[in-house]
Amino acid sequence: MHERGELPADIKQTFVLDLLERRKCICGADLHDGSPNYEQVSAWLEKAGLADVETATLKLESFVDEVEKQATDFWQGIDTKQLSINQLKTAISRLELELETISEQLRKGPIEDIRLMQTRLDEIDRRVEDLTLEKGKKLQKWTDYQGQIENLQKQIKSSKQNEGKQKLAQKRIDAAQQAIDLLSELKTNRNELFRKQLESRICEIFSQISFKAQTQRLSEKYELSLVETVAGQEVQSGASTGENQILSLSFIGSIIDLVREWSKSGLVMGSDSSTFPMVMDSPFGSLDEIYRSL
Image 1 (tube, rainbow, N blue to C red):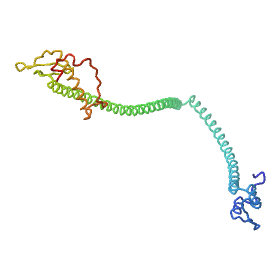
Image 2: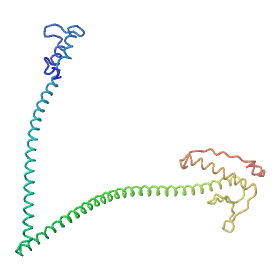
Image 3: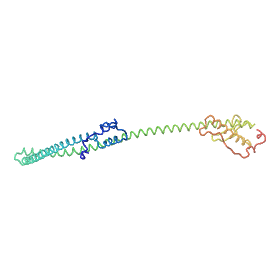
């Protein structure tokens, strides 16, 4: 924009926008939307300069000028420092050469004490060199050990985190095992309660049908048997075909009644169902007339 002669601009966009907002030109003409006067004034928006662009341009030019001055001073300073460095290197080289010459003269000098002192100085220099090398090696070892310590600390921290996770997992396992044990114990107790109530219900139904003084027993394996009391002790009693049939019917009817009651009271652990389909072939065919009437 500066090369094209657009900076600095004759007018600013803010000036044109202010005219359009006031709907009045500097010549006094009204500026209505869509009118030729409005369009002519609006066209100046493309020709007008941006105030922020001009400001930024001026700041940038000033900054560039300052940087160019600093760059010139910087390179002049660099040249001066480089010259000083070269002079110091030359002086150091000259001093080292003089020191080596003096040391050689002392090594070959006629005075024995001086020769011994120079020899001792050489030994000390070699010892200093060895100690410097040894110091570097030990420093490297210390750095390696420091890295190993940091790695071990990270491993310890990770192990502690894993230990916490393991403890949490073990707690969950213990809680799950306790729940399993409780559910197993509950299942055993429910089974035993159901078996005792079922045995009682079988006896109740069987006694309503049979007229013999017999007692029904239901084992833990749900095996039905008839027993009689002889001399104060229960002995297994043989059952006729009809009695076995009655015993089976009592067993099935008792299961249906008991499960229906448990379902209503919420004691059944599972889906609620009180329908038990059963198919029997001539369930009363082997009963005599008395049992059939009952």
